[in-house]
Length: 245
Image (cartoon, rainbow, N blue to C red; front, side, top):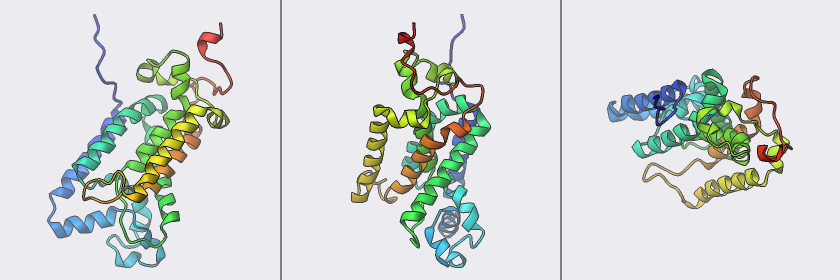
């Protein structure tokens, strides 16, 4: 009798989690001055793009690299644990569907889009943005494109066993699905509450809600560009499987 593992976590997801933990541990072992320098050099800081790049650790090189490196840095254990749990929950499903390489590219692009939206709303801001939240939010947005199809068809188990077998909705189908729209509105609303201090990570700082929303919208709308061609054709108007008989 074969026993199935309790958790199906793809190697790429475990690899990303390991990198995040390794970076956090490595930074925490540095002396305070070096720690501060490296965090700022890796962080995404809008002021870099307002003529102050040479005055910020990382210099002009970080103007390019920080779009990616900011995802590797976390403020504290709570921060990395929170992102790690969402990475395991949504990333595992998405990675199993997209494959490791596409999943990594998708996640990085989601984090970059999150940083871009933060820059758009905060030009010249000197505060650093760190964390994989934008990338994780993109994963959540991507899963929205096939989550409810699985539930409608009574095939929720496929989210764990074979997410590639779940038909995804088109962008227009997603915009017509009240559950996806409502879920998106709730996600945005929760993040906007960060403006008044809701969800602050202890003493580490406020939530970069712009990065979360930017990542989520990227995931929701760009998912089809990364979905593997051997997945079922996207369907947005078909009724649940139980009604097709």
